[in-house]
Each structure stands twice: as structure tokens, then as C-alpha cells.
Length: 400
Length: 145
Image (cartoon, rainbow over all chains, first blue to last red; front, top):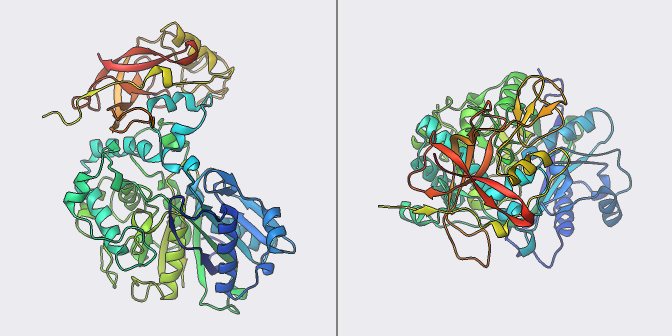
């Protein structure tokens, strides 16, 4: 069992509004981040100057174009001192795992209140959806870039094709995922896509990279989210009911490696979300399993990756994701039904907003505080995932 | 009815690559329209992109065998939008190929399939067709064998 189980808690969460791509201008991306951090402190009942640690992911990147710098934040916000400033490597796959990095800081006695922040601003010259096509070649990318796989969705389409080939996975299942996310987003003012989605609209969506159409791709949005981690003891004195970190893992196996940026994964890892290594360790080390989860916040940058994560986290068997999804088992219900799991009742990155995984942490906290808009009644356990992306991917179990 | 029609390669005059000391032998061979791979001289494991160490045995010794230039489609996508803002949309097919003469995974090639985008399928046999790109380099793409 994990030695730090339930010893730390997330005590504050803050966000800016979500904006369509580019519309957060003329704020800067650092300004968005700072606003989210101040809001997270207010939510916790803390002052920004109480923060004494930073636990980033994605190489502390400011979205994808820039880099956050702790010293700059300290000078800007008047933070007095820090005892910890570190990041998980690679990209968005660390969004859930950053809470584990915060836990490491706190349990090592290096910091008391650790903040994790992500902000994304996609100005026209910094658009994520075609990021690879627009960047200068490197010796490594010269083996990928000339193929015209210009963005993450194009890369994921190739993995999806293999999953379809091996297991008979259908576009019907992808539509079900996209439509369910849209339905979940319908009653949320924060959502970018709220109108009900018909099959006709889905089929008319441009096939950007067959087998994936534009509606299988997540939104391109701007915004920032931050959360604060501290010890379970300190959490009791703060404003909200603590949300305990019951389990948290990041990492991956060599077979996944650089994943869809290299395309060298053997079967069955190629047609996967690359989460199996994290999922197996998370369950084994936490003493709970998929049947104990009341809600799952699965990283949905592309619809097939929801299906593949359901398989890897054991909500269904490998290759069974198609039928599991088509049964309606992932739709929101206000009570947890046996054999079903509400997935992304906030509408996810497909329909609400894409802040590189952080909207999933936010929704898990809302669910476990009992304040979610699409609340799962008496939710006790939430699974939150980060990625797939090149190693690390990550997964976290939160509880109240 | 044809859904996508004929797929072409991305225009070579739009494609740049760059090399380092580890990858240059691969591209120098490609310039001569010779398909090679980075093969461990100790255990025979093939790896692309070329790297300093063999991931199987940690040897730094490499050789650059001439491969037959044929292979098998492992997976692919059919793309319908132009990657270039100033070029009208066209159909192209990024394809993952396991080259004959290698173990497959670990040494796959990522290029374009040139041919009928409605006929390509996983497991199809393909052969290399060379596309000249910027700065005098050449790139392996694929057509039905």
C-alpha cells in the first residue's frame, strides 16, 4: 500500500473563465496563470503568500509555447519563499500526476502549501492543433514530420486505426463518446459546445484524419486552472471539505515510450492509451479498483482515448471498449449503477474546455465536495487521468 | 464509390529535414535511393530514428545494411486537409510501414502512401518510392508492391 495514502489533500481550486482559442488576449498567459493561482488560494481560504512550493507538469510549460518560472511568479505575486519547485517531464500526461509530485514535496517536509498550475493561450502563431507541422525539423522529428501528421489528433488517428483493426472498434462507439460529452456539457455555462449533437452532424464533420473527424478532436481553448495541495492535518482548518489523495502514479513502460511521436510501440501497446502501467500500479497500491469509483474523469483530448482508457483501467476488458461504450455505461447518471461508470460529467475536453487535463481535476474536486453541476450522488471516489502522451501518463484516485 | 480517391505525397519542395551525426548515414543512403536502417552490429536489433545505443544490448556498434525496399502497412490515416495555408486541400495518407529485413517494431518508417486511398489496408505489401525534398535530400514514401 502507498505509504502516503490520504496523508495529503487538495484544498483549493481556482480557474479563469474558459475562452475560445486566442480570445484570452490581451491578457498574457502568465497573467492567466496568476489569476488562477490567486483564485485557488481564495477558494482554500489562504493568501497567495502562504504558497511555498510549486509542482508543475509538462516541463512547467505555459501551454505549449512558453515556460513558467517560479522566481517570476514570486516577484509578481509577492510570494516570500519556496522550499520546492519542480516539474514532471514531457507533456499533458502529467496533469493528474502533478498531485503526486506535490505530495512528495509535502511529505518530505520541503513545503506546506504546494500549488500546481497550467495555463493555455493559443494565439494564431501558437496553435496546438497543428503544432508539429509548424515547427522546425529536428534530427528526430525528421523521421515523422515529412509524413504530414501535423498535430496530436493526426497521430492518434493512426493508433485508433490499429485498435479498430484488432478489435473491431467502430465509429459508432466514438460517436457515442462525443455525443455523451456534449450531453454532459449542455447545462454548464462554462462549456464551449452545449448544443445537442446528432449523428448527422457528426457524420458531416470533416474527416481531418480518417478514422477521426473534427468532432473526435477536443476543443482549442484558452484559460488557466490551479490547485493547492497540503497535509491532511492542515486541510482540516481550511474552508472546504478536504479531498484526499488516495493514490497517485505517473510513469509508463518502454513499449509506450515516446508513443505516437515515434510510432514504434509493439502490439497491443500501439492501439492503446499507454495507461496500463500506471493503471495496474495505481490499483495495486491503493487497495481499491474500478468498481469502487463513483465517477471517472478521463483525459479526452481525442474520443478514442476515452475508450482505450476504459479498457486499461479495467472498467471493461481489452478490446471490449466498443461494446462497453455502446451500452451507454459511460453516460452521466446521478447514481452509480453496477457495471456502469459516469465519465466526464463536466463535458470534458471534448465539449467543455481544454486546459491540458486540469478541468478533470477541477471536476473531481467539485464531485467530491458535492457541488458539481452534474453531481453523482454521494460520490466518494473519483479517478482522474492525465494523457495519453509520451511518458509519463498519470492517474490519481481522489476521495472525500 | 470512391470515398477519398487518389492519395499523393506531400510536395517535396515543402519538406525539410535536418540531421545529426547519428542520423546522417541514414539520409546519405536515402540520397542515393538506398533504404537502410540503423542495425546493432552486436545483436542485430534495428532502430529508427538512429540513436547512440542499442536498446536491446546497449552496444554502440552499428551497421547500415541495404534493405530490400519493401514492407508491410502497420497502420495509416487518411488526411483531407492541406497542411499548407496557401495550398488547396488534397488527400494524403500518412502510413506506418514495417520494412522487410528488420524486426518491425522499433524500426518502422513513417511516410506517405501514394495510390488509391480507398484501397490501402493494414497488412498491405508496399515498396519504397523516393521523393526528392529540399536541400538535395530524398525521402522514402510508399506505393503498392
